[in-house]
Structure formats: C-alpha cells, structure tokens
Image 1 (cartoon, rainbow over the protein chains, first blue to last red):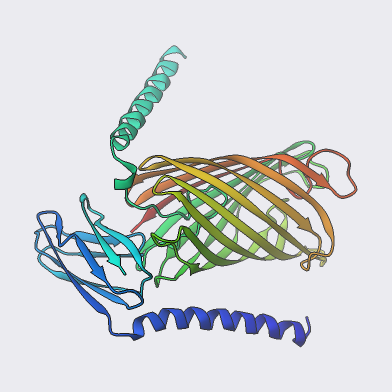
Image 2: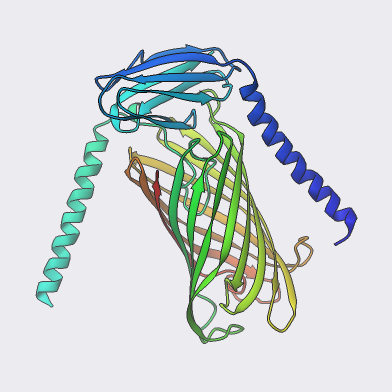
Length: 117
Length: 297
C-alpha cells in the first residue's frame, strides 16, 4: 500500500479521535450546574429537577436510607451505586433541551426526571 | 418414554405459565411509565445505537450459527466471549475471544470437517455521534470492529484472517417506549492468508432495516431485513453476488442487569455472478441464527 493511500486513512482516524476527545472534554470544561437530590424511604426528593441547556451537570445524591441505591438513567447514560447513609456524585455532559428520566435501579418505584431548557 | 414426555410437557407448561404471569404483571403497566430501554441489542443482527451507561461493564456470550449451502450439509457457529465497558458518555469499548465450530460434509468447494476451535480475537470501538433526546427520536453510533481469525469463518481451515467491520448503527423511537426502528450500514473489508501462501482480499457491504415492538416492558419482538453484497476486492471493484435475508427478532430483559436477544434470518433472495441457480449460497448461507446472553455489573 502506498504512502498516499495510508496518509488519508491516518488523517481520518486522527480526526475522528480528535473530535471524540474534544466533544468529551469540552462538555466538562464549563462549571457544572449542581443538582442536589436526597433519597429517602425509597423515593427521590425532589423527584422533578431542572437545569439549563448546554452546561454540564453534577448530581449530588445523598442516600438517607440504610440500603444501597443505584442512581441510573438510560438517557443521561450514567449509573452509580450509592451506599446507605452516604453521598454520591454523578457528572453528566452538557445536555440539549429535553426531559431525561432517572431511577433507582434497585427499586422500580423510585423515579424522577430532569428537565433541561 | 411416557414419563419423559410427561415431565417435558409439565416443564414446558410451567415455563409457559411463568412467562405469561411475568409478562402479565408487566402488561398492567402503562408504556409511558416504563423505563427507557437500551437499544443496542433489541433489533437482532441489526445493532441499535446504544453504547451503555458510563461506568457500566458487561460480560456477554454471543453465538451466531450459519446453516445451509447449495449441497451436502453445512453448519458453522462463531461464539464471541465478550467484555464490554463504557468509559465515557460517548464511547463504548468491547473486546474478547472467538470460538468456532464447523460441521461440513459434501459441500462443493469446502473440505469435509467436524471441529471445535478457538477461532481468534476481536475488539470494537463505538462512538455515539447523534444522541436521542425527548425532542429528537434519532440516535446514531459509528463503530469499528477489527477481528483476527486463525480459523476461516466459512470453511474452518487454518488461515490468517484480518477483518475490519465498519458500521453505522442508527435507531429511531417511533412511539415512546413502544416502537423502534433500526438501520445499519456495513462495510467489512478483510484479507485472508491461506497456508499455501495465497492472499485473498474481499469485502462485504450492505444495510439493514429493523422494526421492533415492546409488547411488555421487558419483551420486544420484531423483524429485520438485510441486503448484503460481496466483492472479491476490498475496494468493491469485483462484485461476486448479493442476497436478501429476512427474519424475526426477540429481546427479553430478565432482570435489570440481565438480558438475552435472539434472531433468525433466512435467505429469501440471492444471486451469484456466473451462476443462474437461485440464492447466493457461495458467499452467504441459507439461514443464520443469533443468540446472545448478557450480564451487566
């Protein structure tokens, strides 16, 4: 294979990697919006929260129950187990406007939603 | 025999009753109250755009069986023993080993063979390019999967094979939490060195469309269609044949951390360059089946 055909392939690969890294790093470069949640008696408090668009978000989840819970969201693409009586931090990329549901993966009844606008 | 039949029947009835009661419990829910679903494995051979959750790890066993050639008997499977993880909210990485089996007899152009072997290794890198939101139902992921094989996927002989599967995996949520459409585009060049020293270059391209319906919160059923073209050159200059494969798909989420997916595709149309016989059974097979079990942690 000639150098002429190798170079464009390497350039394309390098560009894809650069775009991916830029997108990942750029979304965390800004100061995040902090959202405080408590988890008590198997429920999130508050269960409906909001945040501005295009800014990263940091969830601080305080689990007041004795049992562990798992903060999880398919649309936010995060999950974190928070042990009973402790606090967990979940960092989320800058989001586009929309509604993003979250839940406790260990308890189907514990649900909440983040509205980004 | 009667006792065995009775036990088997009782077990089948128990399984059916369990499945129905478990499905019935889920049916009582309203779809809008269901959790959003990860779309990667809900379309059968067609892959959805899902990349998992940041920090999530998964071990999976995925077997693909290919059955039926023009003559004789042909059965080949390839099993991926796979580890997946999602290091960021945009990227997913997978890697693992390949096991293969071949049971071939009387097939023109292939040696008779009955073997089980460790077939090779693979890795996959997935990048989420367009993400779904509540305002945008489309999600798109770009994926590359380099694979090295020491056993030929079709014939089972010892080779050195390098393959680079490149795909675009897109999906659309057509009805919230209920109906999904999936689309794949494929370009898969490969080079194979056989023991006598010859080198073969080939490529497969194609695309698929799939539709799947969430009948209860943890079960999705659907169908997919694939159109595949084969070339005896990586740059797509030597066309050798194409095919259309069609079949049903099934996805079951057993627990929040465990699921299975199954799919069956049968060749409904195909042609080989220089061969007027129906179907393309030279580069492709009459039927293929996929079965995957996964555990997340």
